[in-house]
Image (cartoon, rainbow, N blue to C red):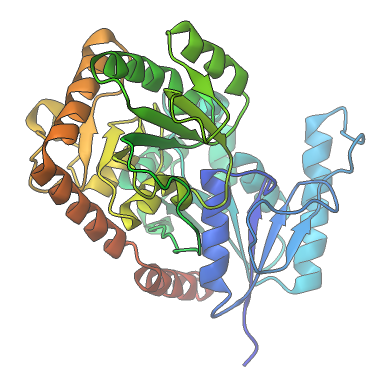
Length: 396
């Protein structure tokens, strides 16, 4: 029997990011049972950041041919995508992020279409127009056969904002694989690590304020920032303005903050760290938490908008932070307020100091992290998607 064709559509695969890694992960799952391909709107000839192992089709504009009117660009991309669907005989086309969702819906002619909802909308300035023009956006999403949401809070937003029926929304889990890598830091220095795009949503300015207070009380530690983005130079200047020593030289053991840049094997820098720090303002379900969990790292994360971390940590969305202690029985990590004030910064510093001196707590958090990783194993997630793709393909 000929395998069904599944297309994964994303605005760009040229850089590292959570959505890009999600598409990379899904391609690894789907290629076992389907003919899977990735489509992006990068210029022709572009290469994906992640080595996906499936056919890759960049069908965007050539450099220097950016259209004057965005709507015309979307129509042209929809025509390109529709032509590719016909050429490949696509049975299912899954898109992630609004631009890809819009083009996927506009290009719909045959087969089933689905959207991967991975980021919250309310209060997220990146997606403010989706909320403002929710009547139009709702028309687009109601064209999809299914919306796959990465956590329950996002499911609720799509139902309430866009009028989606509950039966047309499914929850999905992400997973992480274990690539071959060599641990980068060979010493046993005390390091904390952040990994993600250097953008407003990640709240790295809040993280640097925490680190400045923490390092003042606990000298000899190092913060490693893995990732790149538009705020790189601004954040480096901000760190120096806080009195921190910053460096791009990863061999610099004296720098208080290391800017490591992007990598497709963050495990190399995470391995051996004291903990992962995630101070985000907004998250769906951050892939890097699963990466760190697979290494048994203690997880310290903000109770960010979008509910993704609460969902991963198995903390009920109605439980107030004041009722969650470091020893909270059910939590897979330490859930803290978004660091946006001196009071919340102090809470983070105290939690990190507790991690430093309490070996039993570190060991317990490591055990819980490994448990979280096991719950998002490749096999478990593959079975989930196999069932969901069957349901989608047989939907009337």
